[in-house]
Image (cartoon, rainbow, N blue to C red):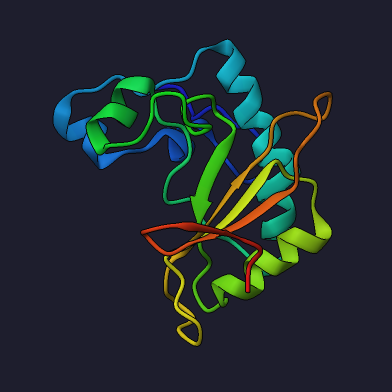
Amino acid sequence: MAPPLKLSPHFDLDELTKSQTALRLGIYNQPDPEALQYLTDLCNYILEPVRDRFGAFSPSSAYRSPDLCKAIGSKPTSQHAMGQAADFEIVGVDNLTLAKWIQYNEQFDQLILEYYTDGKTNSGWVHCSYVSPALSNRKDVLRYDGVSYQKGLE
């Protein structure tokens, strides 16, 4: 068996494509070459700097094939389906603190603090996308409570 394909020093393709739903439903969840390049950029420009600052973690969700997106109720056009987005949290780090650090220290396309409850460190998660060093990242910052999006993190 071949070792997992490394996308960056600390992240490999297996952990960015893992999905219990895909396994359970027999959904093929591997990126095409373009999405693989986006995943590599996401690792190098977002996930590695976050790891350097806050320590080791594994994204809870990154690449999702269009079929997997449909199966979980997400849009097949999601940035996850293009290999441009990851959802993550880091044990012991407040998700608002994590999101603010990314906002002020990294180039990103979209940053969303999802399902976060103020004062509850382990609530919710951070969604962050990155399109490419050659394309313009929007630096769009949002908060999502499960019902609606609002601009900003506070």
